[in-house]
Image (tube, rainbow, N blue to C red; front, side, top):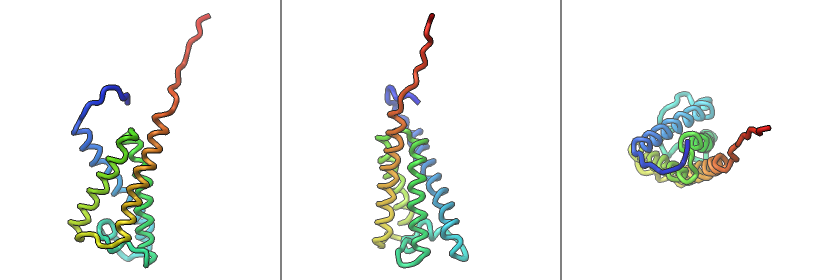
Amino acid sequence: MFYGAVVWDPWLIVAQIVVLQCLYYLSLGVFLSFLVGTRVSRMSLVYFFDYATVTASTVTGWCVIASFMLSSLAGAGYLLYLIERAKKCLDFSATLYILHLFICIIYGGWPSSIAWWVVNATGLALMALLGEYLCIRRELREIPITRRLSV
């Protein structure tokens, strides 16, 4: 993709937000099924959206925390391929976590757990910073120029 004149395309932005959110929850579901699904008898949306499951007092809670952190790492990779711009990574990461907060409020009320806030703030920072780092590395790659020498 070439980055010449910046064109504001709201449909592209909304589509990127929706795809990023879906991929984040898809990866969170995969990590939760591997880490938490082996420990509990039945998986449910509680592990996605209820703040009470994010706790450091149980092994299952630590597995939920690890799932959220691994999803943030995966989200940084999604930023690299979906957003492609380092200066937009913080915006899209913050949007993802703000939407996640609203969904959690609708599902289980205002998150009153300090652990929930720490995990999500750390996940936001991890996703934004790693996504920016990866995008900057891609943006700063040399452009290969092949020359034909005339004899």
